[in-house]
Length: 116
Image 1 (cartoon, rainbow, N blue to C red):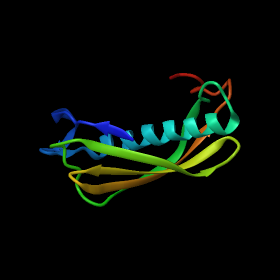
Image 2: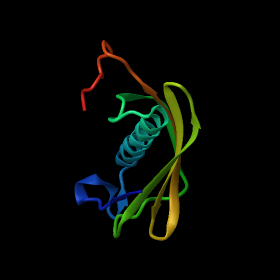
Image 3: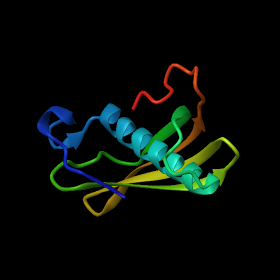
């Protein structure tokens, strides 16, 4: 689980998180969830480099910024070099958004290979 406290410049309008910031939070957290899953599944000592193949976020309600925002992610499908992950964003005691994405391990030669 990721816990996040928004700053005023991350609000889309007063008191509520910008949608692009919400997308960034789920993309990053789902990617790390996929990376950790692939590392464990392959018995690696360090995480493989993964990239986002695609993701979708659906908003149920505005995401309040008055308190803590929680992002939870879990792998729902795993493959040899990829994982599909689902996530939720909860704030103010309610689920505000859900997301689903696919993340792929890349090899040397890919432009994103070990850039992070």
